[in-house]
Picture 1 (cartoon, rainbow, N blue to C red):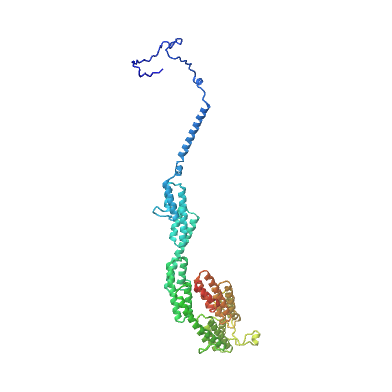
Picture 2 (cartoon, rainbow, N blue to C red):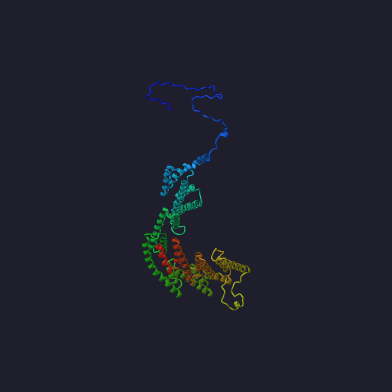
Length: 564
């Protein structure tokens, strides 16, 4: 029934009050009261567990699903909470990415380190300061360290030791050390030690230059060359070499003007080895060739005349037509000429032969004069020493006769006392021991040569002493061959010098000079091939002294001059 009021109903609306009905029959179930409302039947209340209907299975499944979802949400939230720092790094960071891009570009451009905040190292370190575990930044710093290590190595190769040391220190700091850094530090340390030695060499070279000592291993030229080898760009060494070159050029020119060809040649060769492109070399070599041509003719003429005079028996004496005079003239033209020296040895040998003949004739005075003249030319000749022993002995042995053939002392021969005989025997034994030890000419007083002479001073006719003295030349020759075969060229040269003194004029010495000269030329070629131009020049000079006409000299001199 509708309770809405009809709008067309003009009757007054009467309000009906609510009523509870008859309450007296509520407690009596038998009472039947009609209140005018529809009848409602109410069932009695039952227990909860018996009255509740069972839940459908679909609803139970939904409830379990909700519980599982809630558990998963809780786990995810917990994981996010405990890994928030790592996850934060995985999120895009616009500022850090921009810094990393700048750092990579600085690394690519080679701007590795600095103080203005734009270097690769500073930018990568800026990222690490904000995110210590940023892999890109940490790898970038490692790359910076490797680049610094490469730059340090290049600086070391260029001789820039201070820069190399600084960059190596940065590399060590970024890389935390390592074998490569240790190796570079070791190389830098050795280079710094060599640099200190270079400073000392420069001081020594300057002192040698001031003293005018230009050549030789301790000369200014060689010392400045050693500085250049250790430090190719050393400006002090380059300037010093220019000064040495100018001084050598002046020395060579003065020697050419005075006609001293050997001195001029030595200075020119030193200059060519030191500075092969020196502007003074062409004119100096032209003057050298002109002077050499002039002197070669006069030298060959003097040598030829000396040999002719020697064969004619015009050995020495008054006048300039003797063998002695011609060979001495040759030595004036070329003081190191081997042929002229050998000629003087021939003269000394000839004078000794004449002295022995005078002794045989009993002319002791004439023998003494001849031996004195020979001593001026070859004072250590073994034959001369033997002849002097005969001259100063108490009596000269007469020619062989029946008495001597029977082993008896010849008439007029002084008889030695037992003490003298013992002294001679002891001296001979000492001389033989000295010979075995190689002490042929040195030391003075204890050399084999001096010991044999001492024995002959007591007994000028001692066969053992004479035989030992005259056999020294053969011993020296054997030692020369051994030294030459072993490559000990300086020692071989000493043996040749001893041989020239012991056996002046020996025709075999010319061949021996050539052998040693060839060995020096071989060494010069090796030194030239290895870039040791000063050493090659010195070896070439030694060969030239021994054999000035050796066919290989011209070729090696040209190669040395041309800087090949």
